Amino acid sequence: MSLRAFVQMAIAQWTILRRSMVFLVVSLMIAAMSMGVFGWLFKPDAQAFHLAVVDQDGTEPSQALTQSFGDLDNVKLSKQSLEKEMSKLRDGDRGAVLVVPEGFAAATQQGSAAIDVFYDNSNPIRIGYVISTVEAVVNGYNERVLGQKDAVKLEQQAVSTESVRFIDFLTPGMVGMTIMFTNLFGGQLLVLWREQGILRRLGVTPLRPGILIASQALTFATVSLAQVAIILLMGRFIFDVPIHGNYLWLAVTIFLGIFAMLAISYVIGSFLQTANAVNAVINLIAFPMMFLGRSYFPMDPPAALNPVVQAIPLTHLNDALREIINHGGTLGDLWVSWAVLAGWIGANYLISMRLFRWQ
View 1 (tube, rainbow, N blue to C red):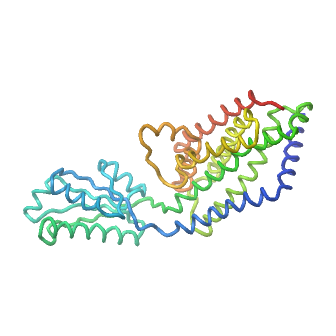
View 2: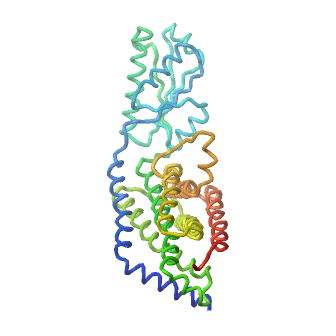
View 3: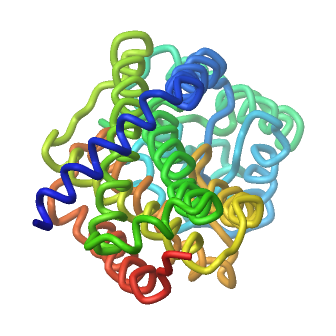
């Protein structure tokens, strides 16, 4: 009886959704338009790059050189340890790492100073831009500070890196954001049915709340999968965004993301009275989550905000999608994100079942 009721409800709800052509067309158009607009906007590699300077000398001359790079508008300067910066370089998060060795100040007085430049060798166009920028700054430092041409020389070393373009980073974020927005509105349908008296009529039948919610979840999941397919296909064939990881792990991540967002929406829809109230609460939740969840840009949040960032499901959905699509992640890389998403699913579905009412 439960399986038969589930199938009947799923067919009925899919029929209702299919007849709402505006919802279907708009949902699919949003996915295509979002990918198209952001893809063409960010397809060219940005000329700005992230440069790390590791100052092992710590003297006034070495600090002056470091400051010369910090004054450039197109350079994002980082000053962490050499080990951390080299790791980020190999991950494709740095354009170059500049190492000012111990004894630099003394060597400049003798005209024999040298600094090491480790650069990302995966993009030939970017290599030339990065190296020419570093050379220009060092030449300016030689003439302005030391008054001697070629007083500081560059020792260049290429490093094999894992290069990720911005469009590669953006595509998984677009998938995660689309999953979030589409499925957070699942609870709104529940409230609309309650307002229209549909739930009250269903409540006098043997239908159980779990069957109703599961059938609705299946319907929304179908729409989400179509949106995800559009984004990934456009990414692959228009913007040359490859999927490096396992397609099964990708499918698992997508389904976990869909059901995590639906679970949140059903909690919202279980205790709010009107569709307008649901819409307001969803927007209140969705927009902060969109930015804190790293949908568009990498983000290093303040320490006080980091627990919030790590708790929200969109962060883990986007992280898992990027791990699979950009880096070919394995189960060892994904299990934490999967566990967090599964926790959101389990906890919120239990809450929604306890709060559910037919009228």
